[in-house]
Structure formats: structure tokens, C-alpha cells
Image 1 (cartoon, rainbow, N blue to C red):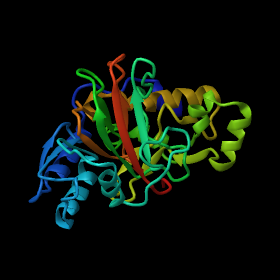
Image 2: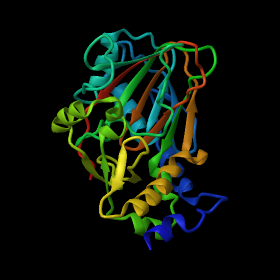
Image 3: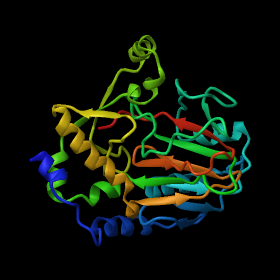
Length: 301
């Protein structure tokens, strides 16, 4: 029944009716201090009228926070932030986390992605950051320090829309499923067995619902990704792989996506609970340097 519902038929083409209701909810809101220019049907907007370099009053931040929940990823251009300003802005959303496996930038809370002809980007798979944590990140703030002349865009996919547009029998089939997320599924591949076990003591495999509820908006969404999800609890390997492949594929549907072309001093703020992202690797051997700060989240429910 599970495999038949998920993989035994093609999901419908044509209009995706779940998008319309989500659009109506998003566009019903209005903003006085910022201007929003939507990039996708239900996800992504460029923000004008906000100075992230220390000039952000509480009223403007409140509108940014509201837009963040509605659009799930916000983009700001022309923000020559210092490392301190980057941290201060991210910290307004909550406590900051440190990443145990990625290189640091100007402080332990900053992850630096520095790519050139010798260090190639490998983030070009759809994923949700650190879903292997028991309490994955709430969101991230990524700023561009140096970008290629062409290429290096980042795509974001709306997992609320992906869930809403599933057929009802598929929603019923995945309801109540739990998936295992494991750092070893990705980061652990380059480790020795001894190091993997050492890190597993600190970061054990995490079980999260395949369909989680956003803790603020109450929206239901798919929470499963190809980089960090290893299997679905209670299913044999063949069935688990078939179900996961069908669900992974939802992130790649263009109707659920937006795409951002970076410029130097551009900033992206995304809700890691409700989106997946994909960093295109089409700029080698050019240089691309990005700094990311992530905010501690809660346990998916």
C-alpha cells in the first residue's frame, strides 16, 4: 500500500492546486517598513528598505521576522556587513550553533565555504542543514564575500508546498512515518571508523517525523532529505529506499522553488525547518566565498 501510493503512479501534472491557497495566505499580509519582491509562487522574496549593518530598529525587524515565516527565505542586496554585524543579526532570531564538521570563519559560529580551483563545491544536492541533529537549525544567514562572475546560484524549495500538493492517498501513506537522519550518511564517509564512533557518541542518529509541523506557523511539511536521511523506521531496505526516493524528488519540482543569483554583499535568510536548498556547482574554477551563521532550532514534531 505504501509503495503503491508513493511510487506506483505518477504524481499529477498540470495545475498544483495546493499552491493557490498558500499564495493567498502569503499575499494577504501587508508591510509598512519593508518592500517585498516575490521570487517564487510560495517561497522567496527580495527585501528592500532594511539595513542589516546595524540600522535595524525593532519595528523593521518585526516585519522581517513576519516575512521570514511567510516567504521562508528572504534575500537582501547591498549589505556590506562586518563579521560582528552578521552575528548580531542572526542572534536576534535565537542562540547560534557551531558546526562540528565544517571549517570556521571569523569565529566558531561562522561556517566559511571557500571554493576555488582546488576546493570544489559539493553542496549541489537538495538538503536541509544539520537535520542529523536532535534539534536541527531553525534557520541560517548566509552572506556573500566573493562570488563568481557567472554561476554559483542557490535554489530553495518549499517543503510546505511540496506536502500540500501531494495526493491525499500519499499524505495518508506517509502520515506517522519516522525517518533516521545521520551525519555519517554524508560527513562520516570521509572519517575513519574510530572517528565516526567518537562523533556518534555526541551526535547519535536522530529520528524525525517524515511530515513535521512547523512550530510557529503550524503548517505541515515534508522533512526528509537526500544528504542526511538514511532510512525510514519499520520498512525493509527496498521499500524504504523507494519511499525516500519518491519523497526526495518533491524538492526538485520547479513549482515549489525560487532561485537567487548572488552578488557581493548579498545576504540570504532561510527557514531551515520548512525549506531545502541546493547550491549550484557550475562556477569551477572560479572563486566563491560565503559565510554562514545558523540559529539553534527545536526538535521536529
